[in-house]
Length: 165
Image 1 (cartoon, rainbow, N blue to C red):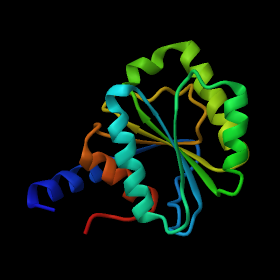
Image 2 (image 1 turned 60 degrees about the vertical axis):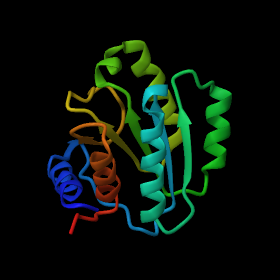
Image 3 (image 1 turned 90 degrees about the horizontal axis):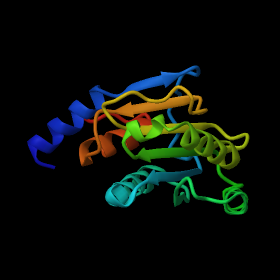
Image 4 (image 1 turned 90 degrees about the vertical axis):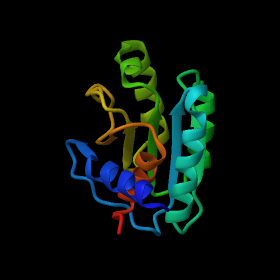
């Protein structure tokens, strides 16, 4: 990593904001996680990058998937069954937060979050300089300054309680 990339990583890490009713407790590296990327085609590669970082950090098998608001209840129940053995669910939002101002979309996303996380701890990771909708029913929301490689790496590190050295 060159010095400018490292500075970008440190800067992104320092700008992380944690929002929510519950205090965020970092996930141990032994945590069995499931992570879902909520994205559009334009930002698909960022979801892949985020999953790659998570796979390097968490030692156990990780379940990863892409999901959108068009997921049917049958799809969601099948996904939930597939992630039954995981300890925590991470939802990474790679869509502009102004898109999240749509009430119908919020209702759909809340159904997705509730169905997939069920009784497991859930964390939302947002890559946006804008506001995070309070209406999204995720107990802990982590916001990073932008959608870029440094912010994505910082977000993955933060989830496990790691800091840039």
